Image 1 (cartoon, helix red, strand yellow):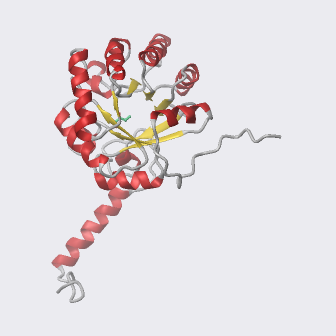
Image 2 (tube, helix red, strand yellow):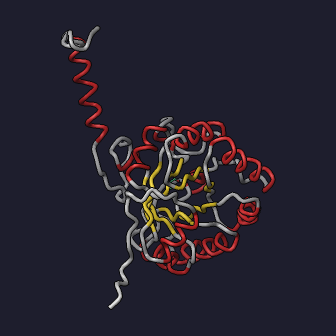
Image 3 (cartoon, rainbow, N blue to C red):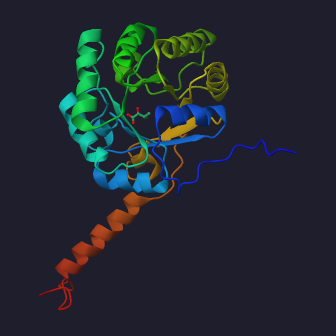
Length: 278
Ligand code: KIV
């Protein structure tokens, strides 16, 4: 009997991940693993670990800049962080978030800014938040050759409109709207869609109805892949802890301990020793 189980990509397989490889992963039922990065050091560790997609998220505003929301990050700041990440990536597909108000005004401006992301920072695709109202823009960006990832459900750039980071699509009407938006983004040429903080059953139904990959964050196991903010899953950013974040390390605590030991060693004059001097 033929073995019909999907063959997961071997992390030692260093072939470049492209939008086409993600599509094939969806088709053979192999989950897509994605995380965020904002600098070279983190990016090269993720890449060595075999991550499929690295997102330079506008979450940089919160976890690196200490802001309350993602809305303030500028295009120049995203270009800067994306160029640092790009220096550390060989295998993963590199996606950059378009910051708030760099793609909503009109399609020409969106096209110009998406072009800057790709040309000046080295990302291979851009991510935009929103549904039907940005589909024309998505189509234009895709037409010039820049792959676009969509983002539906909890869309943090609209936080001031919604007022909370609570789970979305809990009403049948909102779930239906997200389903329609997902199909519209796919028709506009998006290569994948992030579904954030919506019920698992809604996300699974959307993932099944799409031919492109749906990548979940707080959207349950029925998506074609998962993404988390690296600083959340490493325990580095601890201002809040949504239940969808599994903590794979407590690096914040580890670092705090290391910094305290260093302070103690310097104050106690046990650092540096002779061996650590010239
Ligand atoms: O900015 C970000 O990190 C994101 C992920 C949460 C998907 O958009």
